[in-house]
Image (cartoon, rainbow, N blue to C red):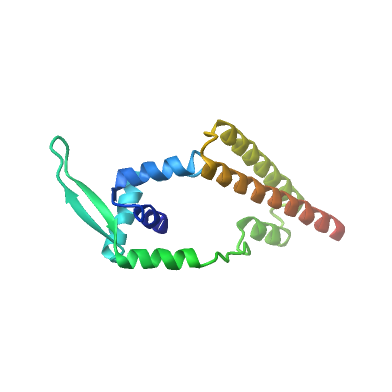
Amino acid sequence: MRLSLLALLARGPAHGYELKQDLEQMLGSAYPQPNVGQIYVTLGRLEKSGLIEGEDVEQSSRPNKKVYHLTDAGREALRVWFEETEDEPRVRDEFFMKLAVASQTGLADQITLINKQRRQYLNTMRQLSKLAAAEDRDNRIAHLLIEGAMLHLQADLDWLERCQEELEELE
């Protein structure tokens, strides 16, 4: 969340609740909604590290609010982030670890694990389809997020099929 908040602040100064609303509006209902406490903790850390600066703004009928803006160091951190590619292969997959050790323990059947995981992925796909149908058609970012999640799930389902075929050949 830290770099996402920096990116939102690149547009201009904002306070924490405003950033929360911006994230929710941009990402839609498919993305886990951040809580405002988490946002303020992250803003505090960003400020301590010199990537943003906060300024207290007086409000006549409400408590003061803190408005944050990006520093040069924050802008540089964003530039570096946008230049980097993401290289996180899923070799530390929790389900795969269960699958790998199941036959060693005698506590779980690999095919049963695969079938259970398949049902979970299919249920998640149904939920995502409902979210996509309910999401505002103009929110392309939210629709792309949902589509990406569904494509990953489809790849996971294909991989589960491959695992099942391989394991059944070993029997």
